[in-house]
Amino acid sequence: MRLIPIRYTLLFVVIVLTASCRKVISLDLHNAAKRLVVEADVSNQAGGCQVLLSQTANFDADNDFPPVNGASVRISDNAGNTTTLTEASPGTYVAPSLVAQTGVTYHLLVVSNGDTVSAVSTVPEPVNFDNLYISEEQIFGSTYKLANVIYTDPADIGHYYQFVQWINGVKVKQIYTADNQLTAGRNQDVELYLDPNTKDKDKIKTGDTVTVEMQCLDEAAHAYWFSAEQSATGDNQNAVPSNPVSNLVGNALGYFSAHTSQTRTVQVP
Image (cartoon, rainbow, N blue to C red; front, side, top):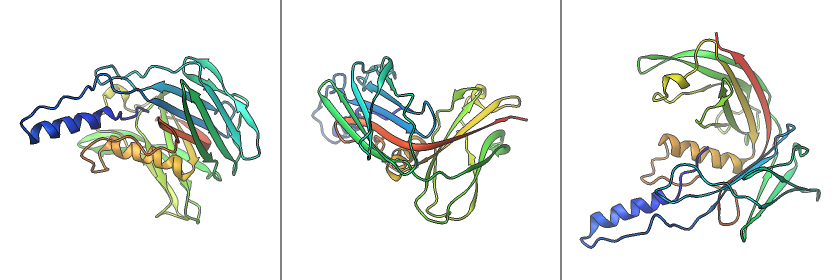
């Protein structure tokens, strides 16, 4: 998932100031202070612990955020157990033996180039991923094949989800989130919508293999993905793009998510 850099907010400020007065005010957008980007996950599945570290780029740079090497990355639990992650490739830190447990709170600590970033996330009770199937929908006159996930929301409020989709092994960039604030105790059939502007080569077609991961995550991690989803779709009604709500403490962008993970795969008829 791509974060929406703060540099766009600065650009909007420049436009407003230029339009409202005759004196031109120039800001150096090309050399803005760099910030650490943290994308940290730990799940209840083997190999589900991974922390990606990168750095924001200048306004006129491409969309690739340079990886951050040589950082110290540790994850500890509320029982005092600490795991030090190893750098498997530039900017990618892993701990294959760390498997998250339901109800346990995990603490992330990242130290890099003088910056210290921390976060806390708790693994919630899992909600069963009952089924996955493909439906057909008419969207703006075109027929789309869409993935649908089925599960039953618990009767108690406070359950949060993210759905991650792959088509033929390629991860779909769209973000899908849900919660049970208004659907507690109900059977859910959630359709993973597709942006009408999606290129034909990226659409689901007959013969494709579709895999969906259902993550049950805590409220703070959900807030990050929900705000990123709203910003990406324009549903937040903000005039200026903003970075997603983060649960990180320190001078960094991103998130830390301790969650459960279930996957299902279907062949598209």
